[in-house]
Structure formats: C-alpha cells, structure tokens
Image (tube, rainbow, N blue to C red):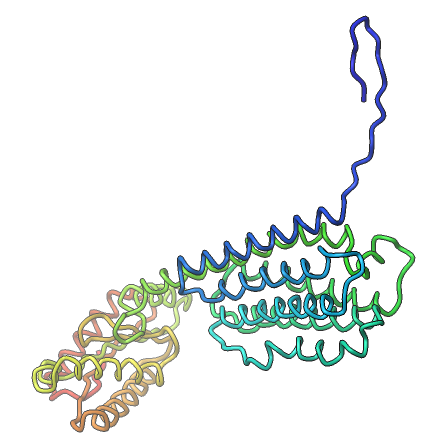
Length: 389
C-alpha cells in the first residue's frame, strides 16, 4: 500500500496483517447472544402462541452468561467460575432442547432439562484439575442436547416447515462440533486450528459462535413465523365447531382425488342429520353443537383422513376412491355408530340419512348433486337409511 506526497515522493507503507483478538470476540459474542436472546423473548411476548421462543431466548442468554463467567474474568479461572459458567452453558443447551419439544407441542420432563447440569455438578469435584476430562464431559453433554434437539424437530415435526429443516442441519452441525471437541479432549491432532477447539476459549471458537449464533436465532424466528402463518392457512380450511375440514377444504381434496384416480371409480357420500332442528329446539343449541361435534368424531373414526368435511349446518360429505358398494358399507357403519353414540350422549337417538353416488369421470359438483338426490329419497323413505343414486 502507498500514498503520494508533494513533490512526487512515494513512501511505501507496510501492510499489517489483520488479527482477531479472542478477548474482543468474547465480548462481542456475549453482547450478541444477549441481544439475540432478548429479541427472541421479545418476539415471544408479541406472539405468545409460540412459547418455544421464550425457551430459545433463555438459551441464548444462558450461553452468553456462561461464556461471560468463564472467559471475561481473570486468565486463571476459579473453581466456582468453572462450575457455574459451564452449568449455565449446559442449561442453555437444555433450554434449546426444551424449546424444540415445546415447538412440537410436547412437554419436557424437568429431570431431562436438569440432567446435564446434575451430572456436571456431581463429576466436577473429581475432574476440576483435569481439563481434558472436563472438556469431554461438557462437550458430550452439549452434543447430546443438540442432537436430541435435531431429532425432536425431525422426528416429531407437526408442520412441514422449510426453516425447520434448516434448523435441523444447524443443530446437527452443533452436535458434531461438540462431539469433535470431546474427541480432542482425549487426543489432539497436529493441526493448530483444529486443536484450538479443545481450548477453553479460542479465537476460532469465538469466531464460529459469532457467525453461528445469529444464524440459529434467525432460523428460530423464521420457524415461529412460518408456524403462525401455517396455522392461519390451516384455520381457513377447518370448520371451527367440529374441527374437521370445511366445505372449501373438502372441495379441494375431492377435486385432487378425482384427478389422481385417472378413470377409477370415486364415490361420494352426503350425510344429513335427521330432524336436527328438533334437537336445537328441544335440548338447546349447546347440545346441538355437541351432536355436530360428535358426528365429526364419528366420521374421523370411520373414514380416511381428509376424505370428509362439513358442508354447512347439519350436512356433511365424504369422497372415497372406492366402489359404490364399499362406500355404502362405510356409510352404514357411520350411521349405526352415530345412532348409538348420540343415544349414549344425550339419552335420545339422533339419526342420519345418507345419499351415495359414484362415477369414473364426473366432477365433484356432479357427484354431490347426484348424492343429494339420493339423500332426498332417503328422507322420503323414512330417514335413518343409506340410499344409492
């Protein structure tokens, strides 16, 4: 590098290599993790439906506190600082795992959250003066929590979220890093930048965390946003009373099913609860609502998932890739089950009439019209029967 002085004198200036100070990176990481943890907690406060955000925010604050206790003090770390700092770090991994379980709607036993810290506190007096053993224990415990978090998001995912798949990759990477550190606690390599991972703290470790931490926080926020949006989309296709698909969802599923069968027989069932107005008038609308919910439950027990829906009022429908004979058999099973269950619930039998149609090429609207005509005949024949078009 050079610059020009008056008189065309050129003075060369030596270029100094840029160095990263581990102490500065430590402070940067602690502040960054605290800010990210606060933002995650703030995001949870704005939308408390995603409670996992609070746990993830706590995890970031805990790891920042643990790093601060161990690395921002004197060069020689005291017994208490090592015990407390690493306990906080393990609690952060446990909170990370608890947040992943909560995100999937699963509770985390307190014993599992505190297991890592308990093992560390019991073992610490025996390995205080053995840095290699300390590293192995901490790294394996942290790696186990990270791996369990990745497994939780993969195995028990409730929603197909793109950001959740990225989170799984990041958590697996975190687990691999910790497990690699545990291996370095037993034997070092001859590669300086790899061996630096075995240090209590190093520039390489700090730099990795400064990059990795905001990436993980961003993905967690993205997961929460995706989850809320997915919930809103699903709510638009769910009947709020019975919890089964509404007319819009049923029509979309039925259309896709007919397109996918490619000339095979598709049967349509239309259910209508008999004399439902009498139930509302005689028992009250609350009981009427419970009867509708009961019928939705009966459909869920006897028909394939997403094959049925509530069209409106006391009318329901189902679309099945089966013959008319098989479809009427399923309708009979629903009719009998509902008759018995309603009597058990309110002490009086509530019945349902069913119309059935079938075709290899008709559109869903045509199938519904034909099933409706069959339903009218079922009503004319005294109700509580299944009639085919």
